[in-house]
Image (tube, rainbow over all chains, first blue to last red; front, top):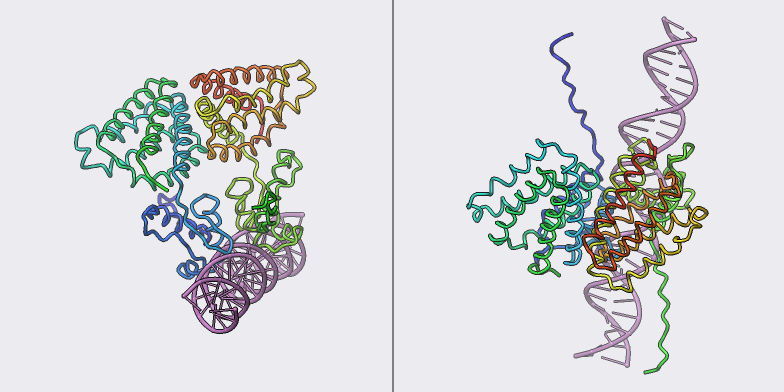
Length: 228
Length: 228
DNA sequence: CGGTGGAATCTGGCATGCCAGATACCTGTT
DNA sequence: AACAGGTATCTGGCATGCCAGATTCCACCG
């Protein structure tokens, strides 16, 4: 046998137009600051299909999927609108998030190995220093990654899938969330306690800490974020 | 002003074909025993469109929605298949259900009025007698209604929506779940304890009881139900 | 000047037809 | 009889065009 194996190229798996349009639109909507006052929230089927250079059929299928997912709303004979979530809906999402992430923490205390838990340190320890004020943006990203990491450690694919959908919407209002330095500090403290509970395999405590931490965010949004 | 107001009939809001096809297919698939060995799991776009008397376009949109929802799987140039959930997926669903229902119980201890909690009694007390053996079928229905009632009392629409999607799949394997009389008895005992905790406004206990009760079902399915 | 009627236009819903990938079947060769 | 090659056929993806509900705008009338 030759030492040089045939390098098969990953066969250009021709993804359907629908799937590509869907991904493109989803990213565009997600990255758009829809809570800005001058945001254009109306979409036009024909205009978009021309912009993408395709017909309306696959575009419509992509839009229908976004509609079901709650990112846009298709109103018959009226138009297609990017949805702004109401405050109540955002709060509900955070509640679901709390329920699922705390369950993930519970599962992680039982099913994750020590090496796996170690990745959490990397996402928190870099912010132990007092340069946090200058790095609020980075912290915001690391914050989300920390929570996603806990969910991943629960090793329940369905929970990962559901929360991924929630993060999209919650991220959208993150820009409106005023991250006071004080809050960030307390957040880091919370995170360290959570890691400690996970490593100690203290199931009940890990669940409780995660739940309370997320519900704290819920309260914060409820009191200090103004939507609608 | 006249004391007799004009009684406007709710204008027959013509629902789109897509929506009607979707509902029809969903019900058909849900009610079908897809875990039977001789179940026909393949669908044909053209055949269905003829059977419904419509064109393929709205049918395709309905199928795409069912695909996203996980009820069917569309494979390009191969066919459309009704999906059988794997055992692992069913277990994951029950896990998510446990997380969300226990959160609902937590919320219910804080946000539900006493009169609202009272409805739970009706769903359980009728099975206190010892004629349960003959009424396993009814019990199975009342069981699901009990859990849905708790979720409703949590008053979080998003949780209701997510769990409604889960129930569809979990119900499908209910037929394969052997409800031994013993299990049903213990289930009723659990339910009564849950009601008591809710009425006592004991948040932590209510959450724990609901979670443990549902995870008990998870263990039962894991050990005694054979899929795949 | 205000209000009404209607026509032009905009928008999503749906039907129809063609296309390419994939499969199944059939035929001819060895 | 076994296999290779090609062809008919099946299936979902996509383009195109028409339709009806809804809106907008303007002319006409009181």
